[in-house]
Image (cartoon, rainbow, N blue to C red):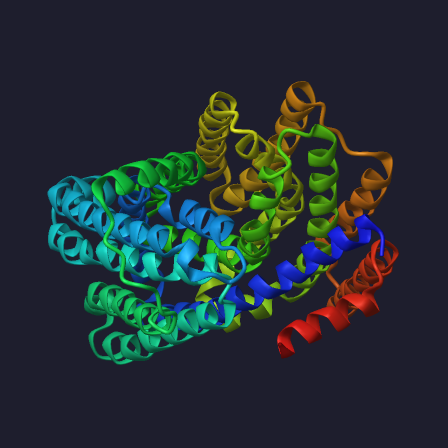
Length: 495
């Protein structure tokens, strides 16, 4: 088999493997979101989203990127299935997650009054922030366990920890929301976090490590390396959290808490459910790109391959999503959330541009181009904030969806110019031909939504779903032997 086909096989196999883990979490999240929507409505969802956004920002500042960096360090040092090679590193990662968890908890308590004032415009939620600050400790301790499972590639244990943790968190949350409604928000957040922590400990204990006493010198040396990389990787995510937080505050002040609930519901569909593909692929893509970062031609080949697979996987998802969006909103939320459909439809088109710009964006991180990385992270988030405020001011929720689309269009062309000038990166004509076809299919499906005759509208949209799947399968079969790929995936699952 050619190197090109082998690379494509690896990308698809990794995506399917990690995608399976993420899919279980998404199913639980959909059920939880549905229950929240039914029991506490849009206003309750607005409160939940604002509390989570605020506490996630504190976590983003204090967790020091250990989740991503720890996986990379453990995975790169894990050789020949020998746990001795990583025992010290695992102990260091767990110490770091404990320390950063305590730090996050303390910071959230200290700034609880300020968080309440900034988030809700009053001091009514001080104790809400004080109580949920404990979740920052729970989450970091959980991350310390899950980082080990992922770094050692124990994906079955990781899947079980995620699935059972989320399932039991949901199970205990149901009666709380049912009986106490909005008053159950804070207890439910804590219970869900605690359940995830307990199951992460249970499954990580199945891997037996030698007891290691870590010296201060070892902790300082290895800790600096882990934190240095982690900070770089999480800066962009932290800035995005702050931007999202500010947008939610703006929407809340202009349109009320209910509008924040609608905003959060719409972008949960886009970033959490559709965005599963990016979470799944990034686990393998970044270490692979970082290992060849000094060779521009190999970097170019890897990015093009990743971009090809990304657009081929996400195109039929976008078209299917556009076709079924009224049903999806009613199933995941309630009919009260129908107003988010125009916003989501514009937003879903943006994912096709995000898929490619996401692939290009990792070049900056892999090469360690920290100055340019910082400039792009700050610059793009300022643009995002400006476009979202402008979009909501003039066109409400639909304007937010349109601004999301415009942002990723700018993001795509911006990174295309930056990577060309700095690293001589460019896509070839074959890529653009397939990319253009994918874009046209998605836009055509989007426009079909405005056909007044429902029979004609859904007939055409259903035809586009079929055409997109046929096109994608045809293109993927040209790149790789699908039969061989499916056999490899099945064999791996049976191992």
